[in-house]
Length: 226
Image (cartoon, rainbow, N blue to C red; front, side, top):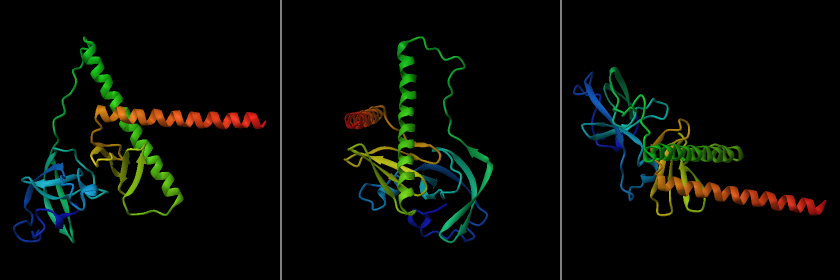
């Protein structure tokens, strides 16, 4: 777990007797920062572990992550500027997810449309993940690897900010968050709304239209030349 020295327990000595072999309950939450914070674009919206509502630290990039709202009991072992959690696996309590009925009743057009819209919205998010991952791979093929946050334009109004860990955030011109996720896992951390999914669909269709037009022009030139 990272970022201990920047959060509510920055001055806490976890090597003291008070914490040694002490079991504490932790909860997974979302790190919220004001836009004026210098690390806003890097950390706002990332998963963070809390003790009694106070921020402790973020998951290390290579550590397994639990969903928002999950709780578990662990002992804390300090390791330089980070902390190693010894988790009691039997204590893990995942947030309840409402399960569909075994035979969902689609007896109204409204219910069917709602399910269709959600599947379509998820498809738009998946397309966005693929587009960002492809752009990142193409850029890395043409330059050396970097530990800096990379920025990619999506259409003319959106920008994707991608961390080396694969975590990404997409914002519009007004710096408002469109969505947040992870390229490696495909996880949707901050969901893409239906309205934004419609905007993304328009961006994709416009790009396809331009590519087809470019292809047609190239074909016509070749035909005239022949």
